Amino acid sequence: MLADALPRDLPTFIARFGSDEQCHAYLFQQRWPGGFRCRACGHPQAWRLGRRNIYECAACGQQHSLLKGTIFEQTKTGLARWFLAIYLVSASKGGISALELQRQMGFGSYQTAWTWLHKIRRAMVRPGREALREQIEADETYVGGAEPGKLGRGGGKTVVAGAVESGRGKTRGRRLGRLRLAALPDASRSSLEGFLAAHVARPAAVTTDGWAGYGGLAAAGWRHEPVNLSATWGDAALRLPAIHLVFSLAKRWLLGTHHGAVGKKHLPAYLDEFVFRFNRRTAKGISHRFARVVEHAVQLPPTTYRDLVASSP
Image (cartoon, rainbow, N blue to C red; front, side, top):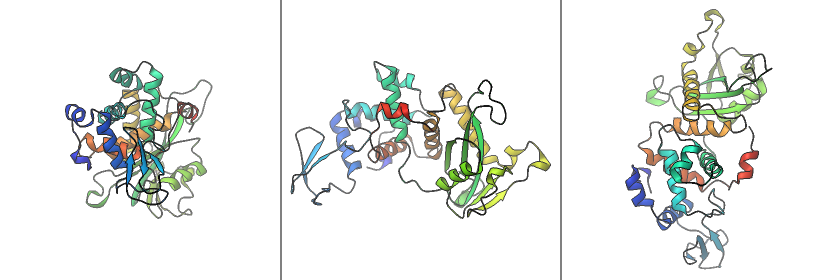
């Protein structure tokens, strides 16, 4: 189903996805958009086993789980509850905290709300997403509070690298394109080039400041366009307006929605959510964001609470 055919407000959402069976039917379409196809023999027909989430191939008897291999795998909660949680997270303009999700969903524990929220955040990253292209602005910033005894550049804060398309097609020079953010161990050349290699196509034009960490971009295959700030000290935000605007919005979002209470270990997940929202800021309605999260959710492997608490940048 196309995103613009989905509900655009909570009452119509409840009417459309108020039962597990309604959610099951929609998830089936997302799991097999071209129709069911047996992974063993390729047969296009299967029988559902009762009201379970299991389908059995009509030809060879191979069983297929609707939820296996998705973020919903092994859940003991109905799909309607999951869909409602995804809707609440994606519909909120600035996102919601785990405490707010716990309140709205009626979860008995904060841990449950926190786990669900981080699983939904992982589904905000599209598997195999395309690299940024054309004209790019890239820079790094520091996020978090300074740590006692940590001196020098950053003062113990987390390095966050960013790259944003500074204009695409007819909107070139007037509207920002797609964004990528990532937490890095440091601002060294290897870290910054690794970030760009993962997110920016070559030979895109990459505009940066004069930091030595970007000194090898031309040799690595990008069209490097460094900006000399030495003659006009302090105007980095004017010479690199796109990426500095993004950094300002991201920090404001972290302080506003999450009150700045984001540790280094889980900062990447919060950055992914911000990127998801930023890249879909012009999408038609909240239904688009909801549809994208569900679409990604069936392509991602399951994640346990232990995996989440053990994850690190």
